[in-house]
Image 1 (cartoon, rainbow, N blue to C red):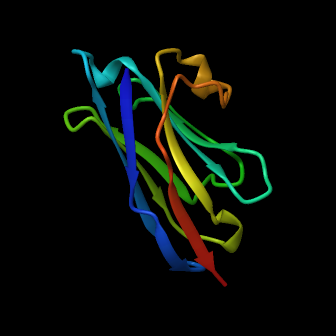
Image 2 (cartoon, rainbow, N blue to C red; image 1 turned 90 degrees about the horizontal axis):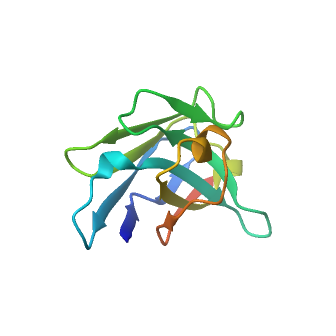
Length: 128
């Protein structure tokens, strides 16, 4: 079991920046580096979509086309934390943002929403 807690959401004007964080913990001894991590988002009335993913040690990253060049995913395995730096935000980026973890690399390579562990989300609102 892995617990994920997101933070850093809020209200920002278009063109602004936010950094989301996701802290991971496990009830039993486990290693954060055993999991690939992803960020997903869901806007009202829309399906959840993949935003970004990062491999076990951070060497490989994937992004949705809609956020490439604006968002950066990173991780600090010593702190059991994954980050999403968001810049040049647009109103269309407004959504609940969720982090997710899984042991299988292909889940982030393919942007699969079938991740094993999920946080409860943090709300990002971008005003025009």
